Length: 137
Image 1 (cartoon, one colour):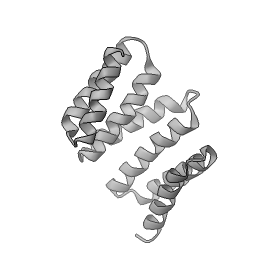
Image 2: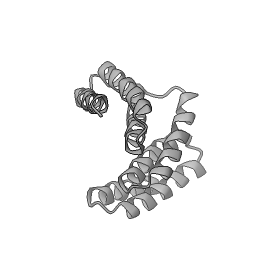
Image 3: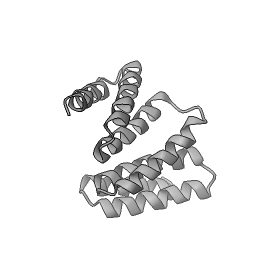
Image 4: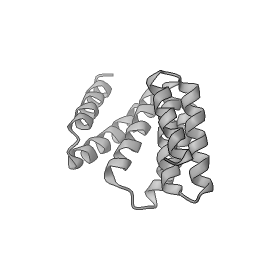
């Protein structure tokens, strides 16, 4: 296991223990390691995880800026549909939390379609639930 992979494993364990600041620091170090070693796709993947941790920690501005950067990076590249769906899911959660209902609805619709194409029923169900909640808000 590489040093960055060890940092990721430790970050995931920290998330499970709800030690979000520790998880963010570990993900940040892994992100820097992937950037330094010329692995931008892996760095972007970890940035998505970091954005999710920032969201869970209530750091909405940081989460929003980070996920926007990941999406900008992904939009210009060939990215697996599931990776894009997972990234858009985080963006939708952030927009929802920030009260940007129209933007969140648009993202959740896109997420639902992507998860449906990938056969991820749990993701489809979450997107449907969020869309209903937004429609009733």
